[in-house]
Image 1 (tube, rainbow, N blue to C red):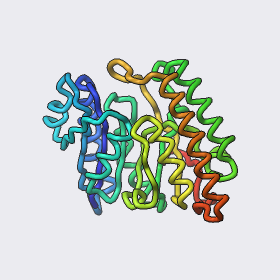
Image 2: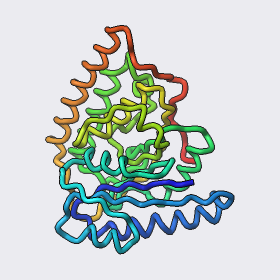
Image 3: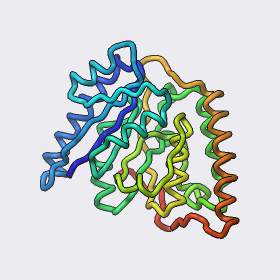
Length: 264
């Protein structure tokens, strides 16, 4: 089976090599053990936002296929990567070494064995206190709370606590999911948009607790600015969802298929 790992980068030369080596070592080990009967053929896509520190060159040396995406934005990078992905299963991570890329193969195994469509990681479960600023933690809490309150009529998976971390970018999903969701956000709101769309469109979603470590290099997020933009998106998206329901054609969802699960 073909699988694809998509990693967006912007000036991550100091960490991307480590991330790719860590992942490749884990993937090779998994192919000798949990995928011994049918080894995964991994495609690694690094979507680089015109880095000036040699990130693309480092990634290419480590065997990744590098896609240059000059249009800035977290969501834009992922949409470019998803459009190019050849794998039946797609996984995502950041290039700053915060996400546990070594765990991706066993989460792929979990998705396949349990007929899951979309698996997302909960960074808040085992959070390294140095990994997220106080402002970032507060902002995440506000966005998660607002999502649960504003969407409780439409997204049982959020309202009942299934999705505890709406901002996580650590995912493993079937590529077929992309045909069922409408993804439009170029920026950081892409993460919550993907989860909202998945829950609306009858996608089987699970959330698993993951370790989230301290990033290598300088942070690029503006906690308050990005948080404000995400909140505006949630408000606008909520109004659109409400209009869909009022027209009598609400997107389907199946709440019983969505759950939080322990690490596989």
